[in-house]
Length: 88
Image (tube, rainbow, N blue to C red; front, top):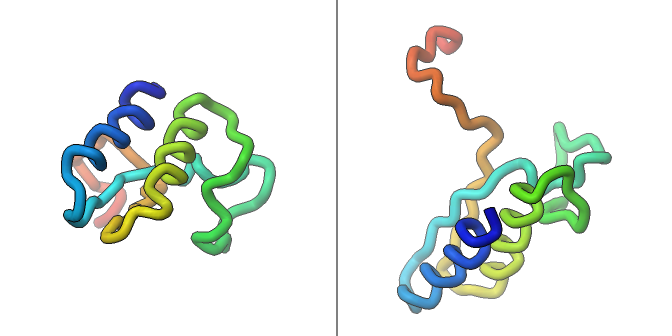
């Protein structure tokens, strides 16, 4: 997890200096012990996490924090359900 999320992000950022980077992150970067329904974006990345996944994504966000032309997208849900019947 750390190799892909942190080290992979570091390599991509170093390989493409000066270009806009869109980093796909996760809501797992927020503090799992604090309600985050209406949390501001500044509430993440938190210092504590339930999983290595959340911790590694938070570390990658911190790595990119000072990089110009970087956009971080925090997705709330990933799913393999491609039917999307719940949206109709």
